[in-house]
Length: 167
Image (tube, rainbow, N blue to C red; front, side):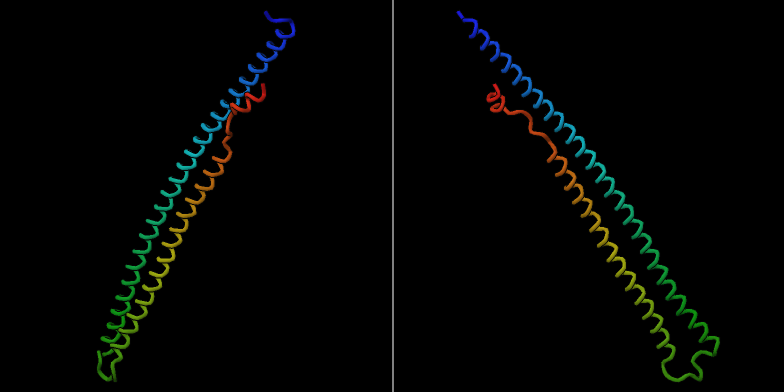
């Protein structure tokens, strides 16, 4: 049979054990809720990242379309200038009275300027493509940074050893 003090110590132990277990389960529930919230936040961040990549892809497609239209415009301008020079030359009587290869030189100059414009256009397009690559990489780095930040905020929950030591 238990004496009065032993009963009190046993009751105190039971209350402390129950209180410690209750604290442990509360910490576990808080950690579980923290993980759920973090995973939901990560999923949202991944969806936002996916949408940002789609947006960048659409911008890149529009830039490519604009680039191709501009290339065609430059090629048309070269042909137009060449035809204009040939028409002016023909209206002046063709090659009569002219010395040297002035028509061939003029044609070559027109072509050279047109090709130089196309090279600049290609160079600008290469720079633009690299910019889109860097922007895609930056989106991935931002997602990684946000994910790490979210995961580092997850609480660890209760400790069985700590609960035992609290009793």
